[in-house]
Length: 133
Length: 133
DNA sequence: GTAAATACCGTACCATACTACGGAGTCAAG
DNA sequence: CTTGACTCCGTAGTATGGTACGGTATTTAC
Image (tube, each protein chain N blue to C red):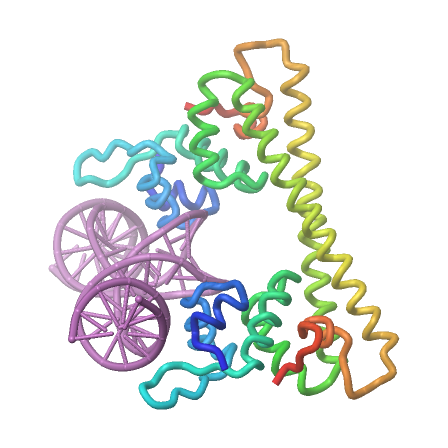
């Protein structure tokens, strides 16, 4: 059994994070014997570590909640959730790459800029036919 | 001259967004003649469009503020800001790709899973030697 | 001249994932 | 037996970029 601070330390999170997860129903309310202090079983540590690993994979807390629900059931549903997340991640990568391309072009246009009075980056941001006050 | 709603419409943003930018000092407080209604010059529309373009490039409002300040000055400083942003974008792409790889592996391990009682994704999330309650 | 549209302002709310605070109670060490 | 550490709870604050609301004033259209 762990006290809340022992649990927090073991999972490498803040005590308040544990209380937050409890409010969000991500972890079960622990038994509170005697003077009402939380006593956590080993499984809660497992659960918190699970949450942190899933977060690291890019799942939101809401998705992790679903993941936990599904974990008791079908592997197919879990797989669908992961596939959906994969789609989102891939779309995001695509966006970031086009962003990267634009930024690279801007930076290199600055490098070949010989006019000290203007900046190609700023120029590119100012809508055409306009002047930034 | 634009009223606030005309400006908002022209820039394709919400009226409240204009008021928000004013609070954030991203746009100048406009003249308010007579009964105190905002009257915006053309430059403010240019400025709002500038902000939206820069946002689309991944700059935060705080960075855009810096960008506007720098726009009057050196191209080199603007370039440094863009390079810094490029670094961040590239690091994010790297993270997302490793995320993509993990998710792909998980999904494919589900596809080749013949044991209906277990799910490789869930198993991978549960820390080793543990059992999810 | 009246009604609808637009404007003003300050403040509160949205999502996300925490983190901090205050006041009170309790537990452990010396 | 006191001091400090830990716990309890509800609520508020953090960051980001807005969006919404309520009450009032003014402007525009008919």
